[in-house]
Length: 264
Image (cartoon, rainbow, N blue to C red; front, side, top):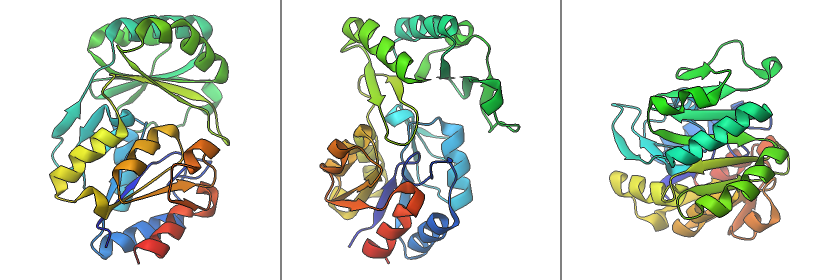
């Protein structure tokens, strides 16, 4: 019997419009009513994860920034907090400022956002601030992560910085089939699977009694750690091959499908 469900957000629990569907929300709540613990594991920063957790009533530790930060929403206690190499963060954000890349840089409890004006939401989630130049904020404190969107940005970061900082930072490159390419720069030990292992121990749940769902390479480690790994239909083929099951896409309430099949 499975006691815990670990869910990626973008491309998994959230649809292509980055919204939580009623079907998925209802299914998650139904699983929680049955006693299943739900853990959110995302590349996004804490404020976004907290907003989704609050809507669902999730009170378990939140895995954010691809495992660089694990934080309890109930009291703010941090189980994990790892920082990206400061020199790398400074170099990437400086280049990104010059190129006009879409970027997010998380420092302490603030995430600085640099995006096209037409796609900036009218109301910003807590902890999110607009920054015209990301590099000006890097020295405010140790950065948790740097997230950069766009195929050209991903390619340039890979060719220019990966050879120099390989081993000193983790470059999580994602090329999803139905949304923009992006790269997340974190501490080399930041990993969703490691973070989930810490959360499982915190909650007293054996790994083989947990399910993990995701759509990207960063979720594969969670598939291997848990008793059941489920990839989304919208995941790349190499991710689907690592899972024991493939659920309908994130636009077809694949999470609700999996919950009905394996937990209810």
